[in-house]
Amino acid sequence: MSRLFCTFTRYLLLGALSLTLAGCLAERMQVVQGVLHGELTWRGDILITGDVILEEDVKLTILPGTRVRFMSAAGPDGLVDHPHFPGSELIIKGQIHAVGTPSEPILFEAVDPHAIAGFWGAINLFSSQDAVFEYCIFRQADSAIHSWDSHVSIKQSLFENNQVGVRFNDSEILVENNLFRNNHTGVRFHFGSPVICENEFVGNNINLFVTSYPRDYRIENNSFGAAADYHVVFGEEVPEDVNLPRNFWQHVNSSAEGGYFYDGRRSPYLGRVIVAPQRMTPPTQAGLSWNP
Image 1 (cartoon, rainbow, N blue to C red):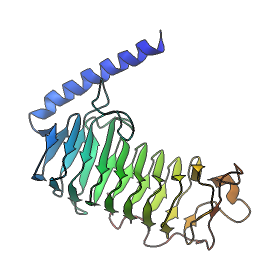
Image 2: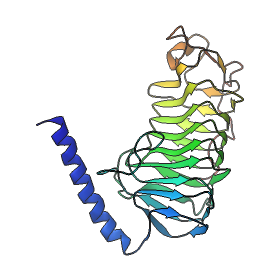
Image 3: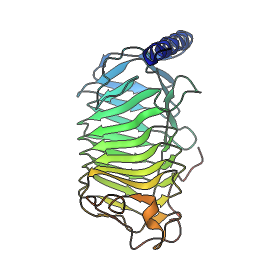
Image 4: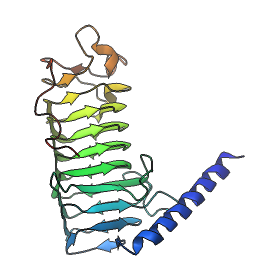
């Protein structure tokens, strides 16, 4: 059986499943699709079908306890080439405030509770000047939050079972007091001016992926738990050392740190991860202050 036929069959099956789920859920959920404008408030159960574009005039407020579920990558999709992804997306050019509470977090997840990572695309931010996420849970995305040239604040949120938790390019972004658990990659960025502090990384394949020329960054007081592959990976355009002081790195010490970083220790044209001064115990404030 050809690979093309298998892929086509998979899309048909996923499509049939998605249509069945959509038909059942649409009766009790607010279905959102197309291009949106103006001030919007979401509450309750929201179903995202296809690529939903929130234009520059949008101010979206998502209330505590809201559950935003996304359709799958089945069949043809309007925007699939990078910086977009297969599957349903929220493409946000305006403002978004998604602020939950410890007792009522906001959920962003697949319509299928058993779906694997990459079932839906991303919350894709494009030149958004005001994007705030607090007390949110993100599951089963390709890149749960993906930011281009935006101002973003992400606090007290859980990213689990995604291909990438937070991914950004040339953005001013605060990533503070979050938990990245069981993703392929926790945080991945290209350029950008990030502040990444007091987060906890647990069970990811790669905790941190720096793809190109980091600048004006501060990445410290994080707890980097054991990673299946690497704590940190450098892309081909990271020729200089990257300073990551005052972090806790599980299993990393002065005699064994090379095996946990894909940097100049592996490829001579890359810079190196500089961990000194290094924390010997995890920061007490790292991660969530609540139990999801």
